[in-house]
Every structure is written in structure tokens, then in C-alpha cells.
Length: 375
Ligand SMILES: Cc1ncc(COP(=O)(O)O)c(C=O)c1O
Image (cartoon, rainbow, N blue to C red; front, side):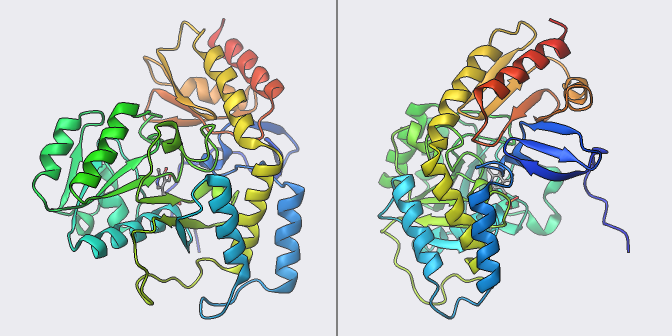
């Protein structure tokens, strides 16, 4: 059997990871400024993470959600504490898209409505509901086209209010900072007004923190930069540092009912061990403050490059926009300087490194970036 060929691949095979570095099968070391698509939060192969998962698999890898699992409770408690949302409750699942599907369902159950508002350039996942609120027609199959989705321009509050006034909206979805859309930070006043309007019109305000959450932006959640509290928050990526896990954080205004949501694998013992290890390390190594400091250093250095059109982002979620296609710059960074980066569209380089990125490694990137840009 061959693989279903849906991914364009670099001809590199990583076989080992250490902190902010990955090592390929020929022993070459790469600085990882991509984090496997914002997934590596605490760094590759962190000893506490390795030991938590290894010791858990020796005891019990999985049992179903029909029995007590104190690891889930420990994960929820630690997540509530570290994120500053202890009053919210947690539903565990396996990915970002799945977290968003469950958020849609909760909003629709609660309001009895089905219309969703979302934004231009949004990405919320590839499953049925999540892809329908994603602004990329090329990944929406005819089956996933929905009548009841409205895409709005970000930072235009009047358009949002015009839709909310109609009285048929279940939820409004927005990323804390748009990731795949090119690292676009919403305006604080816009986010605050969204919060106000959703409360006024009884619409569920959902923050997709799948990419921007878990300390990446220098706060546990990106929405904490705007001084607001959403009704539902979705997380995944950095939550498991590579172990598949997702979560829906739900405000106390939602009443759970047995059977309302469910999953076979969500919240399994191994995933919880990974999730707890991630929270332990974020806390003990002060990775959120490292993301802020190292991110600020990178943001200020990157704005000095004349060739760069715009630098956007917060913490270690950074977009570097060029006038032209960035493919050649990324190719040189990867194959000549051994640095992994991400991309958005044709002309934005995305930096989404592990949150333990050291200043000296950030400085090394700036040096190499200078060389690649010929400055
Ligand atoms: C903001 C956002 N939401 C949702 C998703 C989907 O997550 P997953 O690929 O885990 O389903 C992504 C993935 O890139 C994302 O960036």
C-alpha cells in the first residue's frame, strides 16, 4: 500500500528532537522555529514529558470514559490554575478541529440556533463544521457547504452588529490571533466590542486558541491581551507537545447533560499524562514569560530589516511579510542554514518555535536571516 499523497514534503527526515532542535537521519541539527506547526510547546523530548508518558504506558495506556480517571481531573485543575480560568470546565477530545466541532455543538444546543459568524482568512480545521467556518473554498467539499455561515471582515464591528441584530446567530468564532491567515492580531477595541455585543444579543462568543493558546503569545491565551473573557475556548496543538489531545473550556453558564458530548479516545490516560507534563513544564520553566521576552526580542530585531514589509504577532507567534514570494528565503533557511520556518500564503514567513527558545538561538536566527537576505 502507498500513502495517499496529500502533503508536499521536504526531503528531510527528522528522527530525534532535543529542546528547540531536531536532528535528521543523517545527524544534521536544525533549529526548529516552526514547532511542527505550533505544536511543540515545551520543546522536543523534554525529560519530564518523556518520563510521565513512559511511566503511564507501563501502568495503563487507555480505558474508556465510562470509569473514573483522576488524571483528567488533575489536568483540568492544573489547566484552570495556570490559564487563570479555574471556573471553566473542560471537555477533552483529540484535535483542534474536534474541539471546534464540540464548541459549535454546545453553542447550538444552548441557543437552539444554527447560524455561525466567522471572519475572512479564518482557519478552524478540516472536519465538517470546522471547515465550513474556515475561509478557504479549496478545502470545503460540496457536502461541507453550509447556508448558515457568514464570513465578516475583521475589525469591522458594524458588520458584526448588523448580523447579530437578525437574532438567528448561535455563535461567533474568532482566533485569538489568526494563524494560518498570516498572523493577524485583531484590534483590542474590536475584541472588547465583540464581547459586549455577544452578551447583548445572547450569542456564544468562542475563542479558537488552538494555535494562539498555551502560552505562545506571552499570555496563556491570546484573548488575555485584550482583557476579555469568552464563553468557550478551544485548545489543542501545544496542549500535548505532539501527543494528540484537544480541549474545550466551557464557561459555568453551560449546563452539562450526560450524553451531550462524547468521544472514545478523548481524555485517555496517555494523553492526560502528556497534557499534565506540558502544564508542569510551562509553569516550572516559566515558558510563558520566556515566550514574551524572546518574542519581543525577535519582533524588535525583525522590524529592522528593510526587505521586510511588515512584522506582526505577539510572543512566539510571529509573521514576517514580504512584498514577494518567500519560498526561496525559506528554502535557503532550511537547506543552507538548517532552520525550519512556517509559511502563510505566498509571502508570509511564520515563526512558531517551541516556547523554550533561548535568546541565543533567536539571535542565531537573526544572523542567518541577515545572511540569507544578503544584508
Ligand atoms: C486556529 C486553528 N484552529 C483549528 C485548527 C485545527 O486543528 P487540528 O489540525 O488539530 O484539527 C488549526 C490547525 O492548524 C488552527 O490553526
